[in-house]
View 1 (cartoon, rainbow, N blue to C red):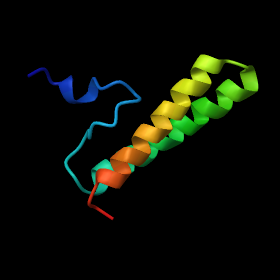
View 2 (cartoon, rainbow, N blue to C red; view 1 turned 135 degrees about the vertical axis):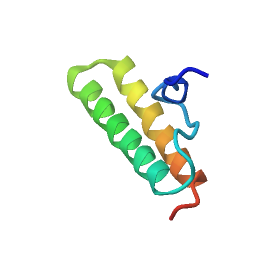
View 3 (tube, rainbow, N blue to C red; view 1 turned 90 degrees about the vertical axis):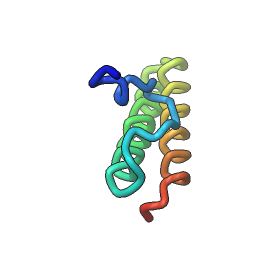
Length: 71
């Protein structure tokens, strides 16, 4: 297994990137923030593909948080 395999998930993947716990929770929250930022940037610039990508990424972060048992 390559050392980077666990980080090669697409940004909009809902697959966990860390063991369950606070690390996964923080990572999922970061994914949501990044997605929301792309969503807003896409809205402001009129870039629909960036906006859609941000929405997918935000949703994937929410799914990861929902599946995590940390909190």
